[in-house]
Length: 317
Image (cartoon, rainbow, N blue to C red):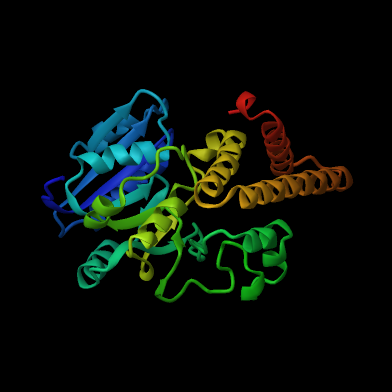
């Protein structure tokens, strides 16, 4: 068992996200003042000068340089194994922490020992709220997402998808899942629950971990008194089609791990229907709009790539 010597350990996994990474580190250095804290950057084989910039501008940061991209879960586990904080913050490289948030989260965790994972309010770059809490996936809420019922009836709980669109994300609330762009996690809970499941290369490791925390009796709490900005896509923008496929693959892995074979088969069918519908819909938009926007073309190519992968999974990823 790790000997805890600090209040908080911040772990950032980064892959070719230099600009966002430096902004993230600047905010963490500023907001962690007053706490005995360490910052660990686990770099997944970046080629954009990220590691050199960290060494130059943040020499006190512990830097772990992986030769290859080991994935999100595995890289975070490397950081968790070497960190010494009572609380472990897993932070996306494209996150900026706003004033007072670290102290507020630390104080809340100190006062509530049953909380295993605490998540702040996530904001978009324009400071609008970015939904960051989910219900555990079921066939019904996945059907609602496939048929866009959660979009047509966003305030109706019955037709909700995984994202809790019926709720304004403005009150403290116990939830099933907190999206893993920023977590404060109790180290004692990690010791009981275990590390992130490294079979998830990227995506779905957050809902898997939250489910395992719930199964061990730990609370997962959304805490809007703390706020961070999540720009999104700092790494995935480098290879959008590949990351889309990784997301679909991870969703299927989650279902295969936590649901029966029949449910997993039905979920796979819904993914196929959803991507066929998206492919047809965006092709119609592309034809009749008279313009081939980059965004529409990319969405067409993503769905085509997914359908190819479903037929021949070993040839795509």
